[in-house]
Image (cartoon, rainbow, N blue to C red; front, side, top):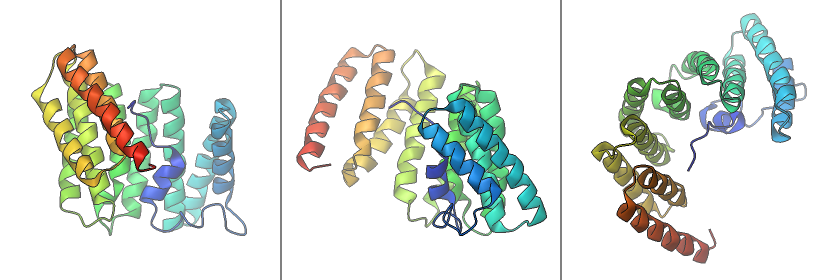
Length: 245
């Protein structure tokens, strides 16, 4: 599985406390919402230049709207628009620029969730860890993921099990990135934990994890392990297909 940043609307779904259900469906969406949604439409059509124009404008409007009325809805919209700009920068492989916007979005999301569990922001932390790796801050990425995992283990979030799997997955990738091209016991341990959780749940995400593990073994020239994982990937693919998944 190639790691990618969460698209902005998926991030909103995971992190929102008040605006997700109504986003864009209010009788009169704010200018920030209007421009953000237009930007997402351009993104869907792979019109990156037009998408960047609209989402950039959404950030400007969101800053002004949050300043005029600093309520939780406007804070969420600002956080979302900042995340959208980070996502766009990431698509253009401007990882430093993307990280800057995601850090600004983190500050806004923390304000939104200041009275709830910080683990709620885990999906954003996964994106930030990816960008930290891409900008050479691998130790910082691992620390962020370890801290996020610890908070998740103590949380009561409905998404706790899935987020923990993702934490293990991103940790495996971080360790793999730090050790490349040499094999690493930390990578093996992180992959094993994530796989155990997914196999118990018989979750289709297991296919993505096995694909990532296969790539890791191929990159580190561990041919026997790569062959074994490839066989498992074929078997689990057939298993999920037989279940209509």
